[in-house]
Length: 222
Length: 344
Image 1 (cartoon, rainbow over the protein chains, first blue to last red):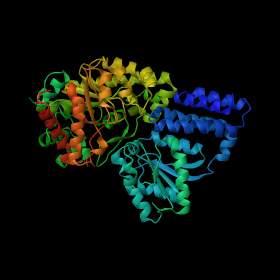
Image 2 (image 1 turned 90 degrees about the vertical axis):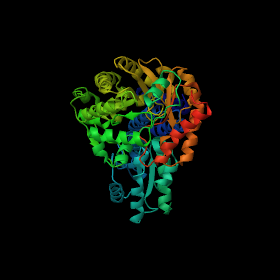
Image 3 (image 1 turned 90 degrees about the horizontal axis):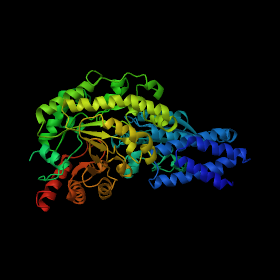
Image 4 (image 1 turned 30 degrees about the vertical axis):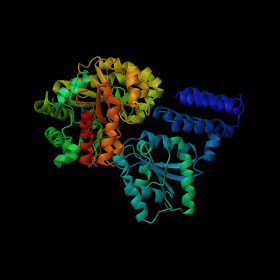
């Protein structure tokens, strides 16, 4: 079986939310003599990218996304030498649900994917005040803050963080990524709350954060 | 024809003077009476005053018992987060995982936490409105209810990776679901709206819902002696509608703004009711004219078959929604009635 075929099998397991089947595929791919780096780059990553496309087409559920995040984490743990090399080499990020928001599942999936992709994730949890986000970002020297909100009412609280970032002179140096169900339903809210970008799902978080990190390094202001 | 007659007539396929119009207004009642939300959701009389103010101001075809799921998580031993501009939410669940939740004593609807407040509010609404305006109670569906015991992430983890324990927790929590539903009906609710998140496309795939949740939904619904509407919770629900039509006591579906009304009608057949599906998120930002046109468009699609109630989709209408936008929904129903010769 070639790497593409392994990847397609892994994607099927992800779509079927079959965590044990996915683990078996990774084990067999490694046992077949594939280098763990190749397993991540040629089997896991393409499956995740295709999964993201399926989400864009609205044919994936939160449950499947959650399972996919767990599968990605499992796979990386099985490829531990490479995982450790990748660990934290992209930089620090701070994530959390904004003040008054308690819908953690999407944020947890984002954290898993970002960790798997090599970010040093500082997850502040639910109901996080704007001040705490910024304090942590400054403390760990993060150029990215990822804020999640599920509902419009709570999403509007993100504006406080935008104002705080700007008021303390971090505009352009600390980028604000926003996400959650409400932003998928109303993309105009991203600009309304002062977000620098969004991803429709956890799978797309790595790509978004890389882009925002690049902008932060160049000091691009919104 | 009063609101009760209009709604019951619609639900049973009789001629009515105009399509009924619902608006999910809970916290908005506090705005009308200048009552802070902690008081509104902790004091039965404050909630009833809010509903009465809304009824006097707008005259929608329902009054609602408190739409507050944090009262359930709190009654279980969880912690509640209070907000100044939205209904309270669960801050922390009572149990850390499904195994722990199995040993949690189930709340007593008449004694635990703020549940008696909701029942007392229902009784007060019934004393005022019974037979004039339908009294609607909203409660979490049996498939999503365990998330109030252990949080959504733990519940998803259990459903996906530990099916046996998930089944045990569904059975355990199902006893409370049935008791709570019947308590609301006994207190005076005319109809229950059951928000079943696991039935929505955004939360769970159809196969997972059909295999693990639907049998539980069927068995619990059969134990509740009253009319029930199954609600989408916020995500699309058309992908499971064909599985649900035979549920005991089911009179209709609340569908999302992203569900196609025509397709929903095709899936459920002619006799069940559709409720929806104005986009909740746009209500604060659209003009009254735009809300009117959006409402009229939905009515023209769904009302000709009867068995249709115009309503916002999702949960509480945001407090920032201007009153004139709410009135536009009612104006659209009146206009539709005029253009179709009054009776539908």
